[in-house]
Image 1 (spheres, rainbow, N blue to C red):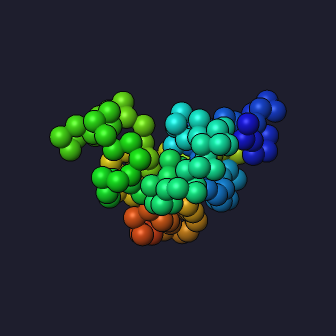
Image 2 (image 1 turned 60 degrees about the vertical axis):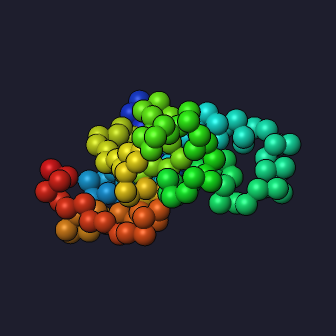
Length: 157
């Protein structure tokens, strides 16, 4: 279980996240900005529990093609699980698990998520690894795409 501090009524601020968090950064309102570079998937969680498989995969397969969370995806047909159960005729199936993702969540002082910004499966700005609030908005680092983005204050109100 993942937990960061105490939220409303003593509950964890973030518990059993559906994503792999990158960083927490303070928000001006007393809350936090949580960045996440990818979603958790059943397949990755399975591989993490299977030591023999994981050791063999790391020994025999190029690291670019491991079954593991990724900062970016969809760049090569050699990626894991790019068969017909994920893509058919170049179209990503809606039920297919994501290889990469991007998320910025605003958590208030009580530990509740009050807003979130997503770069969904097939999106351009995956691998969100950091955020920093400034006077103009929130600067967000998308390591997967190689961009630093500015989420303008107008979008936050």
